[in-house]
Image 1 (cartoon, rainbow, N blue to C red):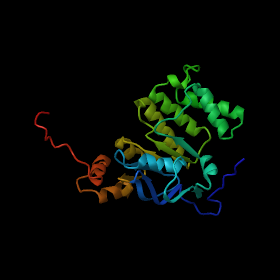
Image 2: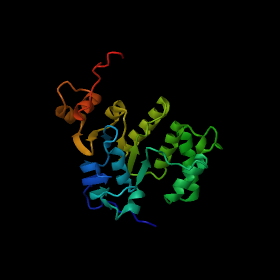
Image 3: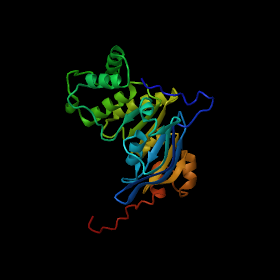
Image 4: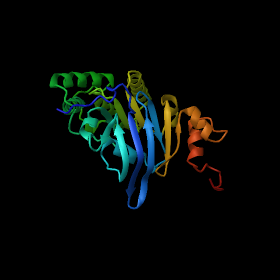
Length: 265
C-alpha cells in the first residue's frame, strides 16, 4: 500500500503542478524547450498550442509516460520520477488516444481501473455502475469497448479518470469526437470537481470551450511558452483588436491568416 502524502499538511498549499525549465528533445528537435509553468490547486487550467507545439509531449511527461531530458516536475508537492507511484494515485488521466481494453465491457473496464487504484471490489463495482449511468453508457451493458464510438470511448475514459476521486485531472483533448450532449455533461462534471477543490489541466483545440471553462491559460508554440495568465492578462499581451481567445491565440503564435491569395479558389 502506497501512502500518499498530504502536501498541505504543513499549512502551506503547494501548486497542483509545478514545472521548471523542462526540456524534451526528439531527433535533435526541441519538442519542449525550457517550459516553466505553475498551476494553482483548484484551478481550471487550459494548455493551448498549435499542432506540434509540444502539448501532448508535456502531458506525457506530467503523466510519467515520457522522461524529460532536463528540468523538474512536481505534482501536488511530489517530485517526478521519484514519487511516480504516489502521484499516479492522486491524478485522473484522459489521454488523447484513449488507450482502453477493447475486449472488456464498460462495467468490467471501470471495475478493473477502480481495483488498480486500490478500491475494494464491492466499492469498485458500485462506482462503475454509477459512473456508467452518469455517462449514459448503461443501455447495452454487454457491449464491448471495442464496439464503442469515439465519443463513447471518451466518456468511458473520463469515467475511469473519476472512479478513484482524484485531486488532479490531466486531460488531452477530452471533448474530441464527443457530441454536444456528452460534451456538456463532461464540462459540468469537471466544473463541479473544481468547485470541490480538484484541479483540471486541459488541452483542447476548441478554444471557445477553453475560454468558457478555464480560469487560467498558457499558450505554447514550438516548445516554448509564449503567453500565460487569465483571459484579461492575455488580452493585454496580444494585439489591441484581439478580444476572443481565438484572436489572442492566432496573434500570439503568429499564425498565418487566410488572405484569399488563390485566384482559382
